[in-house]
Image (cartoon, rainbow, N blue to C red):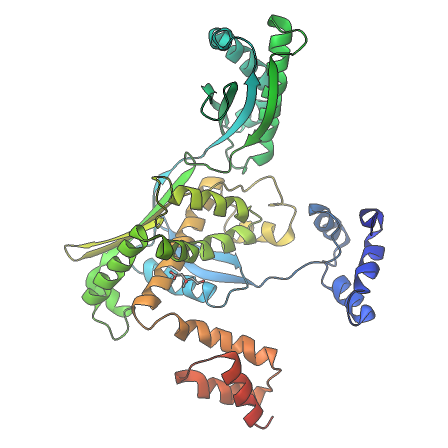
Length: 432
Ligand code: MEV
């Protein structure tokens, strides 16, 4: 079908509903999932193209997340059972032991203009000091507002990329985007630099633009100069309140070994980091931030020394147990959809309207809390016990269990393995 994008919102819904088993019900379902408020609905529909409805994700709160002495009730959008419960549980434990501390924060974002220079490379090298001044001068009109907000260009370098292609060069721009994630800003700066290259050489030596070919101008989602470190520690005996029947010293030892495994073994490291991203992505989603960028960034950073490793660490020595996490994180609290999406805006309000740096701390702390909770379960009861309790609830909904069946099933599965088959069989045997 061509021309779908030209149909009205209503026509698109009607057209797609025809592919369902009951077009009338489907049309209503698609319509009803949308935001009621006319204004907000219009903004929402315009976030993306061909929007015909909204896809709901549970929006929960991990209360009592303490970061740098301040307590936050952290909004999390995730469909995965246990993630919010786990983050809440460890947030509470760590809040009782001083909370998380931000011990390192940087917010510089990079972007590159890739270009080929077919003329004499020495000419380009010699002209670079003048070219740089010319490009930075032009860029001032683009960066004016960002500079007023305390950000702007941090550096601009010419790099030779002969190892990829003999005539390839790169302009590497580093900018501080303050409270915005900065994707649009960085890309606008880079496109201005690309234009500036043509303008400079047209005036200088290459009026027909024969020596210059711009390949692309784009930000990098790899942001190793935009990182956050959060840490926390407690006395090993304090772990008794969360180590269950396990001795806290044994718990600390197994926990630390689990982290060493995740640092050394890629197979475990990926899952370990996924446990961190469970918390990170959920807060990013809830605050209208780009979790795809955060995922790509974090995993590239995890492999920065050539081997993919865990992003978090754990130490236990002299009776003290410490955990920490460092990861790159490009977030914004202004711009993008942060103030257009009604729930993203509300999430930021609930968090006390933080700046980007403060939000980075909250996000990273929630990632570390999620990680702590996951590894805690793994080295004690195993992950299925907590996970399956919530999964049981999903399965009971799936099989339309009555309130009475739910009650009996919850008691029955308290000490038994939960699976699709087991729940289905159990419900079959139980009267409604
Ligand atoms: C599940 O979403 C995440 C975990 O697998 C993380 C981990 O293994 O550390 C539990």
